[in-house]
Image 1 (cartoon, rainbow, N blue to C red):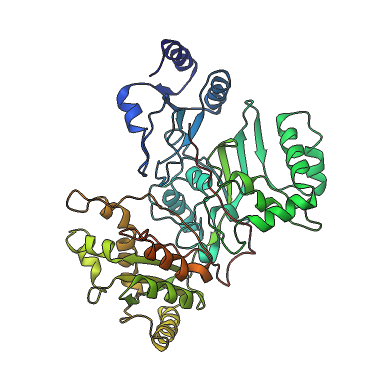
Image 2: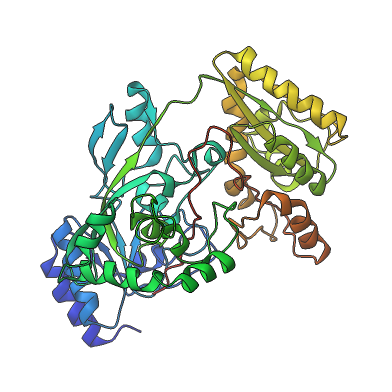
Length: 462
């Protein structure tokens, strides 16, 4: 229960903010949830209007037994933005595009800008922000940075971490600091600062300088081939940079901040790298399988053909679409009653070019006797196929009857070579859920940038 002293302090804080501070029961109930199964009643909900509001919230948290939990759209599936502290929702007022540089291919945005809204502005410029999640029409860039979001295009373009160039932040002492790329000399200069920022650079320098520490991190952190994982802070992402690797890439704390779910600093502005628009024509080959394990082996084959996207729909999701008025017409490519369908997209400068890639994969799968049907969906109907896949989580929440699917095992990532055995062990032990949400983001295609060490998302609890 909130004490009288806490209420008095919150009332005083509310008077100091330009934005809003909500403590009514309805607001607390709404913000006790995100898209996950987790529920936790917050102390209050702040809707900051200015950077100064955020600084005042940081000051309040420093002097009271509470925490700050940054939040944008609340599409998190693992409880990252619920907790007993103060939820700080930046989606209402921090939702602007600040600058776009077409020649250098970057944008500077506030954390509350929706990913698809940003891309709608970028499209006429021939650019896009490449990570695309299944919630891209509502997920916001700040949340994508916090979670190091990936999505269907990550096998070609990499993760959000690969795209973050700079982060403007508020630290725990209220100081405003911009983190970006630093060469060896600039890193050394930061270490001389008599500030919290300087403390951070000195601390990371001292922590990672011993050779044995770097060796242990490289030995015990997940495999470098897995660029998507939700298992803590990405300390290993800093090891290939100066001063820890001679002739290494520039040091950038954004590598650590991305995926940290707002637990290390409060982000107010984000500078992200942009990519040229994808090749204009896309086709999807959708091999059908009689069991999940076969689809896992087919995924390994598909990755050898360098697709632009690869995802899976299992029987549970497919069955949900049968009686759904909005999506049953999107099932035109489904043949029979498959246990699993892979959706593998290829792009080209012409539809014929994209289709030839799909046909080559189909021939390979048939030769290895993987799958029983191999429909190829042309460019004109491509969007309908992906709409069927994007609807998956929402459809699962509306399964008729009392029994419901629960999204409690989410964003698990394994090396591609381990994928069939991993899923088979789940099934053998009875752990395989009624629906399997598989994102084939454990391998990068030939058009991808140079590999960066991996992603984590640290779950923020109050």
